[in-house]
Image 1 (tube, rainbow over the protein chains, first blue to last red):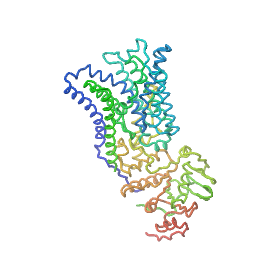
Image 2: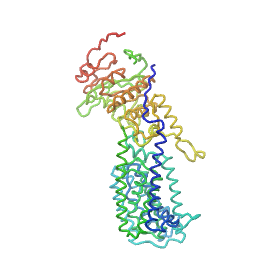
Image 3: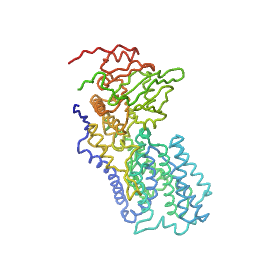
Image 4: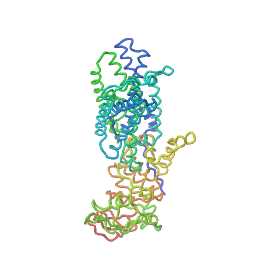
Length: 334
Length: 269
């Protein structure tokens, strides 16, 4: 037999470290953006850069970061879930009714909040994965439904009267670290495992890369898509607990708009709306930057109305950048 | 370049044998009593114009279409292929152009998609992906097939079309496939990249794999195929060793659907 080797060497031998370095630089550059924004604020408003303020930014980032990590999983799989904000409201209201009106123990209330999100996520997932409806439309409809149910159940007003111990989850600290930040870190570690060591995470990436190829490899794509939307819903239920604890009440209108922040955080953190790309760390850095911007706008005295505009502009700008980035990646293909 | 032994020493029973396969769509016969077989270490080119019936024949093997009549036997044993999953379970792998790979993940993730290797942690409480073993196996597989890829951990989109096609084929080989069906494996590739894919097909034949090659490129067929099977409007036109035809004859038979007598080739040496 003749010795014939197919030589497919297209990359320099030193190419491997370059790739991983490039990946990290993308994430590192966002850390630099975070720091640069802090320094910029210090210039604008001397005395801004204090440990208390930084701690506040992290505290306020917790809810957004948890939502963003869930949204990241969905977006990596090539989907979208814009219902997470109002699902968070609904989860919060259901928990409020359970704990305040029915007198359930707090732990059961937490479970109720997560279960509510899980259930709505399951509805989303069934309609998207099994009925084959577009994710954007399904979750847009669900955004309205969840909002309507939350307002109906709560009669359109906030629910007050959580037990005193509830506040710990919003304002407490452990060894100087705010409890919400600890929950965020714990959740991030759990999701790191899900992203990298479970089939759910792995197939989210391959479905986002090539759904048909994943199906042809024998993967039950519909089941995993269903699971992905369930995780996203459950994430909204978890975030609802922290947000409710921070305001020590259940507010049926507070969640709307958080989906914008979460999706912006995903894209700022390197997630691609075309699917197939993203990371847990990116989602968290993105959420930190979003919170930092909101915080800075508050300090500068801009009204929440103006903030809405700014967040909208940031979201569009981030997606624009992502489109340019994706085009460059396609361009690298020979 | 080794010359193909005319007729081939193909005495072993065929790995896949289809007999009397018919398939009708309404009144139209997509396939009419077609026999088709492939042996180990044999590359069979399945040729025909559009609508000749070759994709219907392949879809029957892939479990996407059921034949109205006829039998399929694997290793001499008659089998039912009712679904794509059954086809895969019988060791039939189809490599489709650009449908095989996830661009955004690396080579091992693609090769092991749907059959990831795991290792237990904490006495089996947790099961982690065994990335090291998957990488080792991938390197071994690519080495065996003499596919040289420097960085298997780069996302697949970083590779050329030829490399991607060889990775897709390697993925099929790793399944311990009985039969590998390649649908236009060199279409849309540059000349050097076609060469990579053709060399790989030759390597696979040397390893004893059974391959069905669907191609519109007669040069590819003449170079790597052992045998050609030509269909025309659902009927078998010819089934003969590639040494008994030349390029012009192939094209004429594909177009006309009329079998021509075997070429009397002068012995060159």
